[in-house]
Length: 560
Image 1: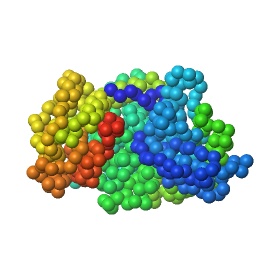
Image 2: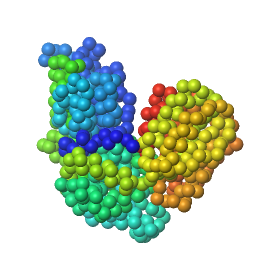
Image 3: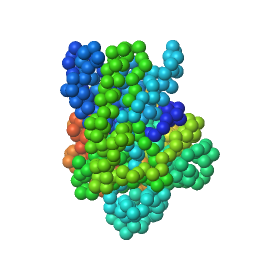
Image 4: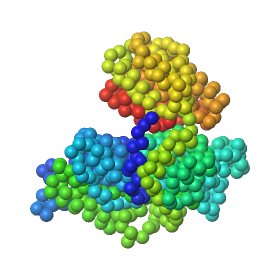
């Protein structure tokens, strides 16, 4: 099982979280903004505010931002997932002068982990000052929200349960063609947004807005409520931004709703969904949280007086009225409360400036620990097939690292999850499984360790065979998330199926009962082909190398 990374962090935080806090983007401008002879200010920040922050960084430099000494300030912004930035700071891979994560939770967690290291006696990061705000919402397709009574009726988690528990699904609301209710939120052990979504569900189940206790979480009513909501999850994930993008691109058949951020709902109106339907923000009547986006200058040996002064100058610029007004235009709530809330935080963009009406309280760390234990019991179980390329090109380091990645993937799954190992080269071999991990984890690990590379590549045939077997199980057991994780380091050269035939086959199941996630391993694999395979079955695609494949597999585990 994964370490419960966010427990201590959230115990001491206020408002909330963010969208891409778990996704990652490369540094937005490695060369920096401004003259090369200026004071270098490295800013690691949550990528959800990339457009706004980098606009302001360019404007700051263009305005002649400088120290009192006259030395110009050169800004080097790094758009990253907040957790990724924290890990890079702790490892020494990144030494920013400013840390601006999605949530103050990451400030607390960074300090806690920093002070666990020998010789670190004081916190690395001060609390910081919020620069923008955005509430966590349930983003829902407007026709579906209207079917539940929106906007006249306040909606919440209980309304979602009404749809999910009715065997008729949306048919209970005279829309049988919409099928079942399908929800997306990030994995609570990877992402703050997922953790706070589950926490909000628990509060709703306990009929509380503060003072949540371990006893509340043990109560049958709370557990039943959590189980009912989590049973509607299509799959989990590390990035809230992923759900926003895929929800809009794939339409209502992929997700009925997703836990997002208000600014992402507003942003969606600039990029309408091909489905023709808009999404609206539902502020759970039971209560929600804020994402507070603190800006903190680190108290580190690499932050000298000039960098501190530069950080303070840039902060003042971000908090200036023009910068805050621009944040509003991009869908954020300004941290400057003197700026009145107006468009685009309005009904025309699916938002309500008068919301949220009820804010929830983050409980102590021991309660959050208990929450994640309860969630592990309540969460939807997985039936996943590891489709593993053992062709001859995998010999040596590529195969050894891929084995390590596959074993890391298994470690990320629950004992009650089921896993099938499907090996292929120019042949598709008999599958090992499905096996429940609690009893068979060691057996699967041994089979992975004993893989020997050889032969060609029959990617399409192996994917189709694995998909058909998984689909048969999905039709028998609708309580689980059914998926394939397909890894290959080469191009198909041995299959009887063509790519077009495989895509048609995967897309034939309109409700995508089995999702396909693909990994292009190394330079010889064709990422375009693997993206097409994943998209046909409404999954996701990633790229890895011998150096990164373990992390890629760990990231894949976050979907389950």
